[in-house]
Image 1: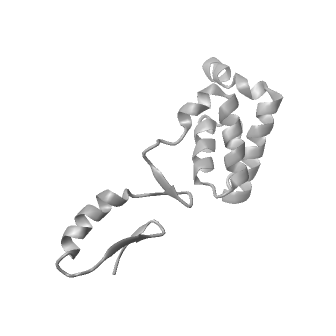
Image 2: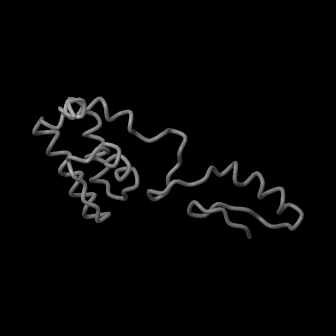
Image 3: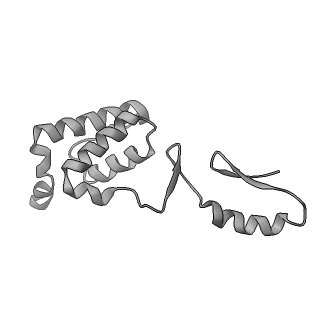
Length: 120
């Protein structure tokens, strides 16, 4: 318990606590999930919901919080992932590579529309 309290000492700063409360409020309004300050994985869940959110306010608030708390930078998104409207999409080149081989003989065209591989 002591280690968790020392890791979360940044929550004692009123400015940072205000940002956390704002993130929690925006997550509750968008996703309907109530996050509590005593949760073991609070930082991870805040990062997950901030990445999936369509709200620019939540993204901006989470970015401001990450800039002020050095330990939260490690929770940021992996640079290799691609998102579309808050959802992770498959890599276009890897999914099209096998699809193109099958469809070349049938004269169909493979395109990506809104993050989904479509054949015409």
